[in-house]
Length: 202
Image (cartoon, rainbow, N blue to C red):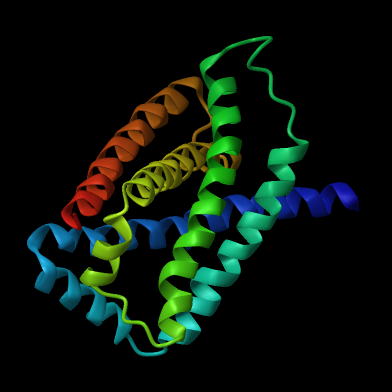
């Protein structure tokens, strides 16, 4: 019974990491990338997202609750997993360890980012270009955001590889090699988008 529950929790954790949390990450990066077009471009994109119907419902049930489960169960996995990097050193073992490390970093970053933006918005602050410009004008915060964004993207891209394996979509060694290259490509592409967005604010 306990084994079945853990199997279900791990599958749900994997699924939520891709849908909807991973898709939200991609969407968030794309919206932020509008900053490369200037202040007005970003503010228009942010205003469009703020104006979506049922926004509070969508944020709660499509983003925050799935993210909360993924984060809490992810911490359980991270601190109970046995890493074999020092003994074996295989590429996938390193990816296994980095997935756990990046998950913890991402959780800290996301919690802080939500505090600086969504929580402040609840107190009357406006989430716009100027807000992000003020945050990222601090060199420490800029590099904190760089590390956090890249960590989140790595966690998603590498998690996508694990998702494809655990859900039986890439069973053969060849398909897993191909998915490795695909997910590396996704990591590089999204990292470029994320870093360009951050530098646009400064």
